[in-house]
Image (cartoon, rainbow, N blue to C red; front, top):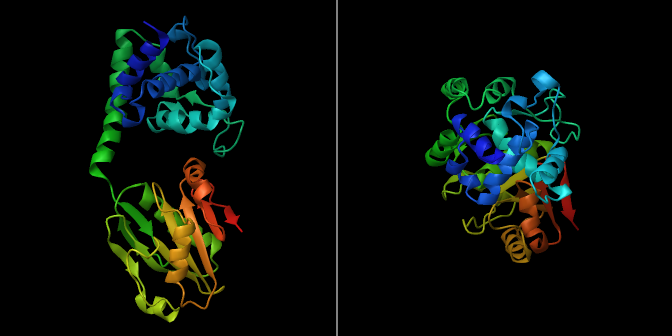
Length: 316
């Protein structure tokens, strides 16, 4: 049996069944995360699992860039050096959530972008992995899943139940949005963007992907000069800075509707009666999603990423 096949068996017994996780349906994704797991315990093809390394016993941790080098050298891959962020987001994050791998093993509470941050299997996992393939390994794996649950099932259940997203508004009130990335971005806009970049924000409109209007301050909007509130014309979020007297039109962009030239024209017509400055913003989850729409974005608009909340990109 190959080392990755053994890794697959170990992870499955730990509740991490790659065959049941939607995000790992392609063979390439499955192979990659198995090789990442082998790298985190520093095992080559002919090594025994009893020789697995960890921070607990060996003071061993490995950075995402080093994982790429390890896989390329020992598992016949040609992963680009610049793919370290993919290794972190598409592989290590899952193993972290499953309580199999610990980030910042060598530097407690290290920032996400700390280049010195290392990964290691957790103290509990290393004691289980070293027992493979004995009967005791099976028993200890069963104890782990009994305590922590079966991660692949937890992920599937999350997809099925579609847990609503709770959003804390500027005034402290809480509202619920339907689940999904689009509304997750809206939550981040309200809870992080508005208080960070508006001096005295007030939320005037908030929609939901299920076509529900959560907040609509029509009287206030009409005072600002917006007479018609047609749903198809409204941006996802409308906010007003009571100190700087600016109106913010914000689109949450996941799979469609960035502020391109056509949308810019529509929003200009929508705010035609306003006598105050208008700020238009396309909000994305991260750089990967932003790149998909970069060439379509209109001038005189801005971009904000939930993954890098302290910065705004201006297209002037």
